[in-house]
Length: 208
Ligand code: URA
Image (cartoon, rainbow, N blue to C red; front, side, top):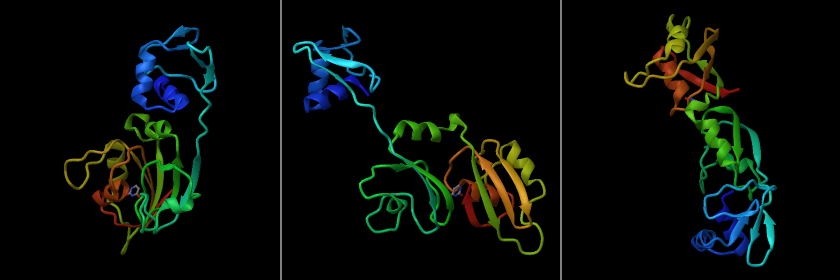
């Protein structure tokens, strides 16, 4: 937590006033005045001392919520006053947000959390967090996918728009009408679009 936010909470004042107080040298951390409002405190460890009064306060450690849910089909991943949404799976008072989104008809694992830092980390493309999906394909007579599909996934497939190149992914054919896909990106309709580019039409998608 930032020092200015901790001071604002402590004094029940606006952030701007807290920043002014920090810059004026009214607070010390670790034995010396800290003048940078953005100074990062370690919650539960570093006491902030109000120099004028000598009072000190340790920012309480933040307790986060983590909900690992099974998303059924038919729920959206946004908060919505009328449409059925994954937030209906949580207690009403929860402020957790979904880490990424699944399509309305996609089922499977969905993480919801109040820890925005962790959510950003998990979603950031450079974090390379792999997500595993099983897809059921429409297969009318024989295999639904092009013969070189797995190779194109490995090499970094170009989507049907001819412009979007995906990061290397894996495709494992499980049967004539089912496959397992591993990706570490989170583009819009990514798996459905990747499979469409190699001749497959997804009828069911499930995140493992
Ligand atoms: N890829 C998709 O196409 N849909 C999802 O819901 C998730 C990944």
